[in-house]
Length: 188
Image 1 (tube, helix red, strand yellow):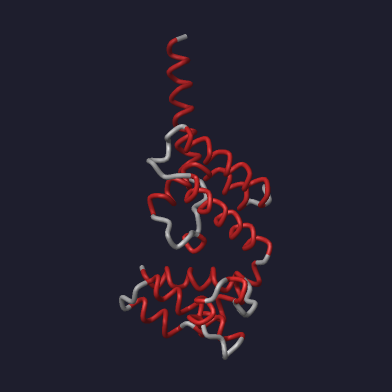
Image 2 (cartoon, one colour):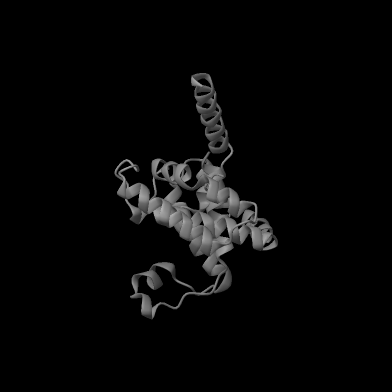
């Protein structure tokens, strides 16, 4: 009987290790700019299996987000998040789920955005490869994207206004996500 319990414990441990080893990764381009790598890792460890289900198309955004929020809340309450709170871990999870689901539903939009942005942001990508600060490059990329829709758009002016007075061109979220992806790749 004792051998069976030990064998069962070993099989369970190996299975759990194997599951987490293949869990989907959070796309780094989806994370809030203020999230640290450590916070992203904590979130991945908590919701990796949920991300797998989203990536495979078995879970939509609403259910996945609900499951993730519940799991993160419980982990925070049980002090299992190294002092990181719900206020940062939940947005990491929500953004990842939303972007993964959007990429799945609109792969052509992301492919087209990548083609366009590789050309549009070529100089900026080269600057990041040569050491330009990533956060500053993201701001400049967003401004370039907005100006591609409305050449008269003034980023600093509009974002200095109260949100109710801003006049910002409409741009698909996939462009911002792909821009961050390209800049992150250039940073490596």
